[in-house]
Length: 602
Image 1 (cartoon, rainbow, N blue to C red):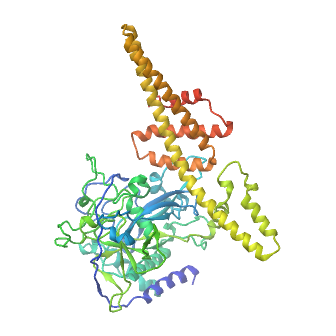
Image 2 (cartoon, helix red, strand yellow; image 1 turned 45 degrees about the horizontal axis):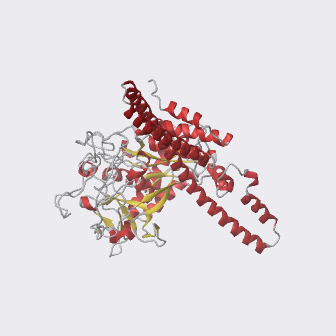
Image 3 (cartoon, rainbow, N blue to C red; image 1 turned 45 degrees about the vertical axis):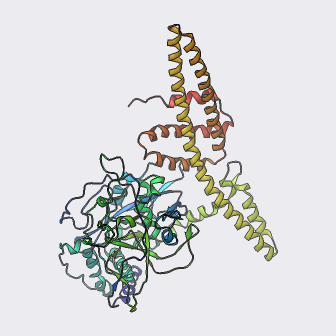
């Protein structure tokens, strides 16, 4: 038997070994409550909710960018890609989770449960790691990364819908056959309403057993369709994707809208809900199944089939309401803006169909015990799950890439172009430590060097964010310069008209306004050049990486964003020239800024 088949069988046998616990009804009525919604924008344009096509049981609302994996008996499990612009596998993006409750605000007393905290996100797969059909579907949704940029989209994949009762039964029916190597069981057609509902009333262990059995079935029958971290390397490299529950960070980043929304929208209480023809958010009831009876009594509220509402900006359905959803890791409280160090029960996200609208927000979370009071596995009638595709974080094919990135971490040469990498003081300290004969002194110096590198890494992250802010603010200064110039042109024309009509008093008044305007214009150009000097203090790699991030943000602002994109592009070019020449001519800068504002022919 091959290592692959042994591994697959072991996965399933381990899963089956946990089966057999008697079911128990868990109480999923949360004790603590939170509140309200907010914010806008969308990625695939949501389509109006309508009746579910029973011919599309597994994907009732197809969208551009959908990818899928086969299910037993001809079904499919549909997923959406979530990307993060990063320099590679070791890089990540800092994001906000939860909600920053203020004192006196409803929900403030549960800030230690769902309060504001910082975390980090990255994907495990690049475009090259995907099977051809996935690559073709996903590529149009990814940003165009210019040559020379150190960033690339790193992706993970998460279920478009909650796993349905029908899908769960199809997969779990394969468990015994996979473990024993027997023929697959006969398929049972299930097009019932109940089969299209999210699978609920299952334990966290059963959700993980589903992932184990499905992974084993895919690796046995459809391994070539799974993403592979480091595709093209040997089959035993360890980077083959597998099915698992999403982590809480993966779930919440995707539920908030991921890279399909702006940074401000990403931190809103609820994802943007753009309704055609409306200025603000559409009613949450168009996007979520929840209890709409005042007071949240649960009357007239019920679980609904997948895909009956509109998708969030990433194309995910039912992330708020309907079935609440389990995630992979154990529950941790919130302490001082981070996750606290003790681990509890399992985490449930998104709220459920019995919740009232005032309690629903993207960062909400609940904690439930793994076991009921009688010792059986905890099962809740309102809790289900969706899946994600993961892989090893450090498959052998990525070792060199990870090591190279790790070596650069904490190096002073990453902060400024003035330090040659070979002359980096942290590297010189490495050499001194290696040459030190006293083991105690060597250990002490090693601790000092590690602390130095940690501090440099922190400074580097802060500088990267500051560089992005600098590019955006410089683009705004350039926009201001153009506005000043338009005003000066209008004043000059009006002054000429006053002179032509013999109105000397008005001409003098306009002359004073023109003098003030020119002073303001010259001051703005000086500020712009100061920004160039500041930008030149960053390495070109930092500027290019942050420029890519800024472009992502500006692309979501169709009117002002187009103009600011041209300004930001010119600013980055000017920074490169300033770094080389160590000077900038104000007249030349002004001429180029005004030329960049000229309307371009289509």
